[in-house]
Amino acid sequence: MEYYSSHINQLIQQLSSLPGIGAKSAQRLAFHIINMPKDQVNQLTSVITQAREKVQYCKCCCTLTDQEICPICANPRRDHSTIMVVENTRDLAAYEKTGRFEGVYHVLHGAISPMLGIGPDDIRLKELMKRLQGDVKEVIIATNSSLEGETTAMYISKLIKPTGIRVSRIASGVPVGGDLEYIDEVTLLRALEGRVEL
Amino acid sequence: MEYYSSHINQLIQQLSSLPGIGAKSAQRLAFHIINMPKDQVNQLTSVITQAREKVQYCKCCCTLTDQEICPICANPRRDHSTIMVVENTRDLAAYEKTGRFEGVYHVLHGAISPMLGIGPDDIRLKELMKRLQGDVKEVIIATNSSLEGETTAMYISKLIKPTGIRVSRIASGVPVGGDLEYIDEVTLLRALEGRVEL
Image (cartoon, rainbow over all chains, first blue to last red; front, top):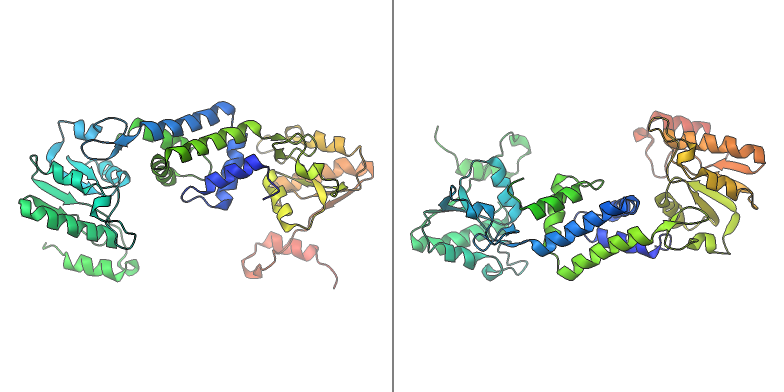
């Protein structure tokens, strides 16, 4: 791209290597950044650096946090005997936003995927098993409803069942407000299988 | 957003203040950055800082470049008597990509917009007028085909005409490959007015 100077090109290239940012967005962002006041640019870069350096895994639930133990694990009013297993911190946040789950979490940072060569040792499963030695009554598996998520759920449930701890899986079915006409067959069948008596 | 730690929240906030990046993309980007190797993060931030610090306006055509005079203005093989006026550096790049324009450019960095309070003095128009004192044969106005772009084109043409230099405007009409059915009426009328004899 001869028509941009090398610094602009490098910035466009760096930005377009980020997920969800295509060539056009990268150009737009690059020129936006070049036109930003210098102190705002400094703030942006320092926040990036800080986040990368300070954020670590919670020693208990493995979520991303800037403390040794995350605020949820450190909260004595949460029910520490109920653990919800999620694939990543964004999924944790999705459930936290509901404001209705009072237990704690465990973040796997991935899901088992033979296709991508991700095995049980590549996700934070050992850390979960260690936690089960404490006073845990129920493990709710809230991995995604994808092939990988389901595989991971099955694997974990088989691993935990022998310990006698209750294992459950979040319900799969028609989303609230969903129009049956536009929902895929697998989901429709799941919803049928999972029907509840009224 | 209590469910994310403060460093993560700050990063999400910074990223979502960039153009075209919504709340969801900002979250996705933030976690991507936190999971990136440290040296890649350092590279990203230093490229941002460098671009912001090194990139300046070309002393001749006002495009963004990291030299005093941009490579296009410095190129003796370009036709310096033909100046194409564009709104910004991305528009310049769009024409450069065609590889068929052999003249030079002038970048206005904006367009006249009474609505937004942007007047002729807020864009790089004085710099253009100064260049016309040299050996210039034609000024091709390639501002956008928007209200602001058209206003700017009219304004510039009225300003230049008294000097006797030829002023032209890029053609407006149906885009190549465009289906008439889906093109707005104004464009269709423009295409009709601008019809060329075969």
